[in-house]
Image 1 (cartoon, rainbow, N blue to C red):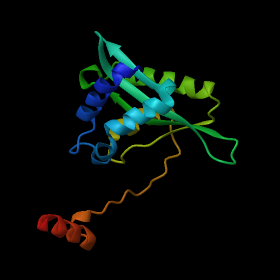
Image 2: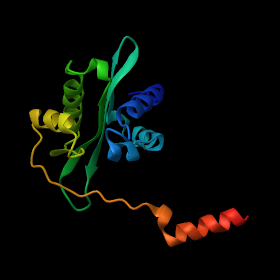
Image 3: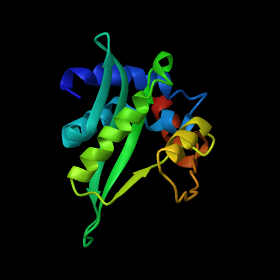
Length: 158
């Protein structure tokens, strides 16, 4: 991935991670995170191109926990333009990212997705991911919180 690829990758992600289909991913996909990830881990940010267009991306990061000899490769984002699905583009991106993680001494590769994202789960299982651990994602709408309402009331008075 190069600097000039940030905008097309972001736009593709906007089309893929919609609130209707993937609400958790939609909430966390933003341009700031993409720029920050590219700035800190550009060597593990990959794109796939066809006809001079970005048609897919895999964005990862190598992490090392303090006081641990283990390094982890984390596949944070994976997306492929829908009309190019079923052409092994995601598999090639994940394969290349896996190799990069191994070159950087990662011992474990992590990925997470929504439990209802059956396409992603099938894909990741097919390529060797396992040991699934369920986690709970909670949210709270702050618009009904007393402090939020107080602030809104003060702003309206000004």
